[in-house]
Image (cartoon, rainbow, N blue to C red; front, side):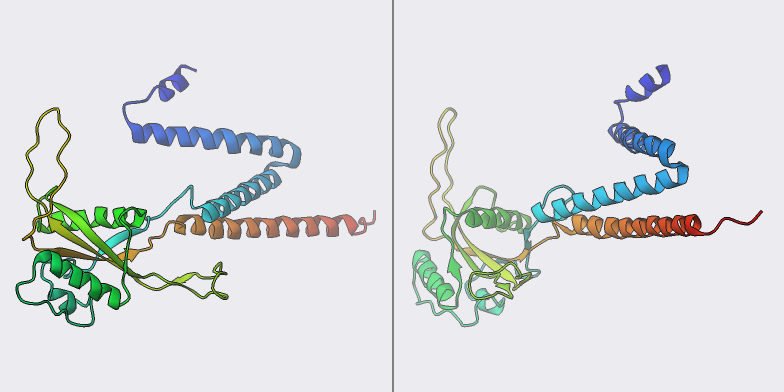
Length: 273
C-alpha cells in the first residue's frame, strides 16, 4: 500500500503521471472483466471474449465520435494562405494573381473609396459573394487574414480594419435535387478575399474606452487571398472504427470456429473400450 501511495503521489511530471493513470485504469477495467470471465470460461476463452468485447466497444465509440465529430479529432477546418499571392497590395495584382479573370478599369484620380466601390462591383460581377459583416464567416476570415498580414509585415497590428470579405466556391456534390445533400461528400475549392484598409492613428487615454477606428481616406486598400482547408476532423475516429471493427470481426470468427469445434467434439461417438 505504501508503494502504491508513492506512485499515485507523483505529480511533478504530468506526462509520467498521465501514463500511470492510463495503465492503472486499463488494468482495473479490463483486468477485472477478464478476471470474472476467466474464472467462469477459462483463461483462454475468457481472454478472447473480453478482448472481443473491448474491440466492439471501441468500434461503437468510434462510430459515435465519427457521427458527432467529438472524441478523437484531427486537424480542424481553417483558412490557408495561397502561396506567393496571399497579401495583394496592388489593385492590378488581383488579375495577375488569378483572383479575378478580367482587368479592373479605375479612372485616373479616383479616390480610394471610389476604387473600393469599383473593385466590389468587379467581384460581384464574377460571382463572388460579399459576406455580411455580422456573419460568423466574416469574422473568421478576418481573423485568419490578420495572421497573414502581420506575418508579411504589410500593416501594423491594430492599424487596419476589414472593409469587405468576398467568398466564392465551396459547393457540395453530388446532390439529389436541390435539398437532399446527405450524399454530398465532395466539395469544390472555396476561396475568400479579405479587403483591409489602414486606419488613422488614435491616441489612447487611461480610463477611457478606445476611440473608434477611422479609415484613412488616402490609404491603399490591401487584399488577403486564402483557400479553405477542410481539415480531417473525423479521420482518427474513422481509423479507430475500421481498425476496431476488423479486430472485432476476427475475434468473433475465432469464437465461432471454437464453438463449431466444440459441437463436433460433443457429437462425435465415444471411443470404444
